[in-house]
Amino acid sequence: IEKEIIPLNESDYNSKALIFLEREGSQQEAINLAKLALGIEINPESYFIISQAEAKLNNWDKSLEYILKAIEIDSKNQSYFQHLGNIKLNLKDYEGARNAFSKAITIDPKNSNLYFKRGNASEYLDNHEDALKDFNEAIKIDPKNSELLNARAYLKSNLGDYQGAIKDLRKDMSLFGIDPWYWYQRGIYHEKL
Image 1 (cartoon, rainbow, N blue to C red):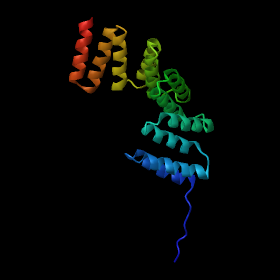
Image 2: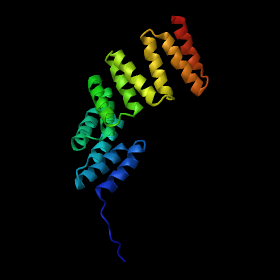
Image 3: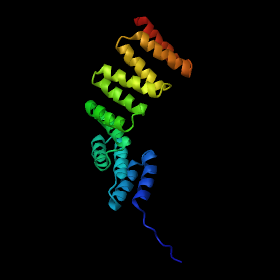
Image 4: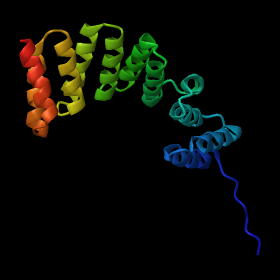
């Protein structure tokens, strides 16, 4: 009895590619499967998978090329713009990163991570006022996020607002318990007062 072979569709190849994308050292397999999907049908998800795999391989220019192709097809996907922002950060194009995260925020304004990332890009541009606004917005959305509280404390300390930095560290300690690092940082900020 012969079994009927059912050809894979683009979605099947992308599903398999996503599995390889998460496996250590299997990014090339993910790229090959996503390219097979593109051979069946041009679709943004395949380009996104290839872009992510190239980023994991630190091939930032190739990653950029493929994410731009995904965005050309689907300019309403927040994840694509977030990934573009991450690529731009790695390429040290901080203004480009800010723009990409800003676009992602227009699509998903309740995503605290997008404000955090845009704030980081602003810090690289020495635009501390915008960075602080973005960290504040991120914390407003996700007030119990330790990474956000620490980032804002660090920025406040760099701006000379040691009281504000200590306040953020206190809040973080009240949420997550006592960690020697918090005491160390708090001591540094108190010393500068």
